[in-house]
Length: 453
Image (cartoon, rainbow, N blue to C red; front, side):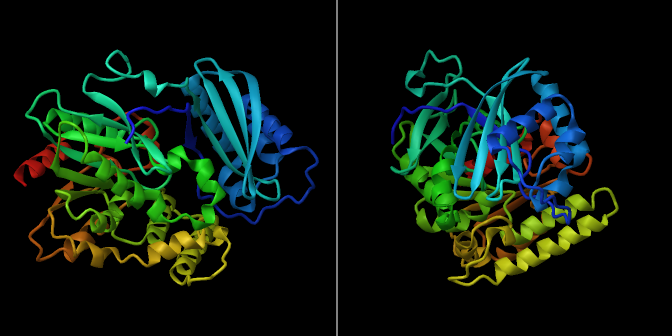
């Protein structure tokens, strides 16, 4: 484990991930390069010409309906509200991974430099859009006691496997008795930074700060997909949940046992969302851990989760449009296709929620409910009732599965969402754009549970 590394300075906010289906198409041949096309699109958006941006560009079938000029306006209004008006386009670069090509356009706004990624499929149709800020490089080799970006109780580390070392943050209590118990925070799927940033919310940072006040150290780390997205893309067809979540969590655990001021016999592994879903598998590789914590972890299979989340979102306004019904039916078909996958099946990822067969095949072999019953160490399950991404039904299924096992404890929280943040209205993706913090009831309960072990 190295205690020095180097950060890169691009934080991306995914605007379009799983997109809707549309029967609309435009088969007009595209004569300009994708770079020229992307620059023209960004120019139209920066100028507020949202109708032109919608009508005059070729989009993938799964994307055009989901956008619309109104969606562009909403997205770019949020962007300019946060970073000010665009002043000029500074540069653009082209990167191709597999069949997809990404054009990255750097735009100088009033308050920051913004990167806009326009993603093209193999037919040079726009299939995705991302934006984020370009941050200054931080040289971690120079961080230490005099680094103003670090709190006095924080230490930057490099953890994980030799092939994919990950940047991490160890934070220890300012008061208390050494050696400290430690909680390792395992994020869910996709590119997650060590704070598990969602919009403007930073749940893992909140948990670390709150547990530190309760005398408990915390280790959190960037996910492999966050740090090595390009490398993963080169072999994406063979990428599975083992490489995405499990392997790194196990490696970080073994690194943590060597940390100064940390009690190696009191290391707990906490997984959030899909990170929690794979905690039972992680437990098989870490039998000498002190215990496990599942934070808003799904008990249902991931393909079912995707369908449930979309169904919730389309029913939010009380009426389901014809196009939304069509998408629901399409998602049902994809869910069935995932469940029926067999070794050797060559299925286009676009028919599998955009994910390659090997990923789903690994997940299909994982019986989470049978695996969790094999855990004999202390296990804590936490769930918010206002969570739409992992519904309360998942929590009930965990509870039912662990019935009769005295090593499991369950706590649910009224009015808390998927990030364990308070609200009184039904949860929506938009609430992550308002800064909130993890409710201290959650971390108080974690601290109490750890001290009881």
